[in-house]
Length: 198
Image (cartoon, rainbow, N blue to C red):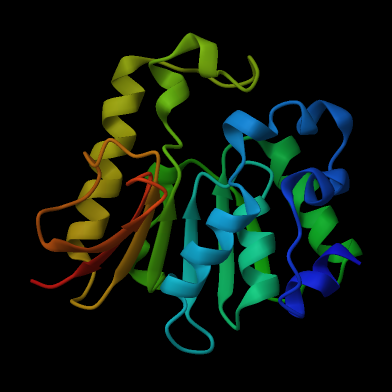
């Protein structure tokens, strides 16, 4: 019912949406998973034509992709290095018959961005530098990894063609190359909409 409502542009609040997740995942929602309203706005910006290939950089439990795929005609891929979260995202996608999502268990540094046309980034690497932001203890974190991941994202976005769209949420902007122009913002600048212009 939740995803049917999203497809029909019926508003769903986060408490209702998060019922698709186990209780342990729900307790992390406020800090770690994209709010429905933010996901809808970001997805609408990123999908500028049917079939747009969108990459969620650090997809967690897949909330952005699941909402975006329900509200647009884009194809959403989430990259996440916690296998349990990828398995959960794929299970929800299958159970609710959401065809235009795909979740991959991989480290972001193994991903080449040239296969995608638009990108979403919700400060995925912050837990490397803020111990209060850790999701669990299942992955290695360090300041060196924080820098490595940001550098990779920056370099890959730099290689993208002119016209590439990027939405960032709670970002430090250090992953955004100067070739990207800020088109507009939302929620007092927390959600930023970028397009590569040079």
